[in-house]
Image (cartoon, rainbow, N blue to C red; front, side, top):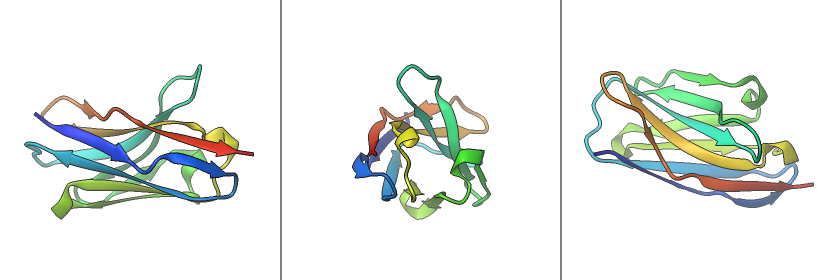
Length: 116
């Protein structure tokens, strides 16, 4: 069983920064993709960024140039550095792990609130 635990959310003013962390535990088999998704009130969950166990990254258009995803394979941890935050970035941010040969796993989420 895989568990994902997010941390690092909070309240920040527009233009500020936050760094989210997601620690994965359990049996994790490569290859896999880890990622961050977010869900704002009344909206569907959307992809923010992903990173493979090989280090290949991908970003949603709104995240490019402002957000950076990184990982520590040794620590089974993925990070999301968010800079130049905007009020529209307010959402619950979820960590996701998708092994190639298994089902996807989700964390419980961490709230990010960006005040104007």
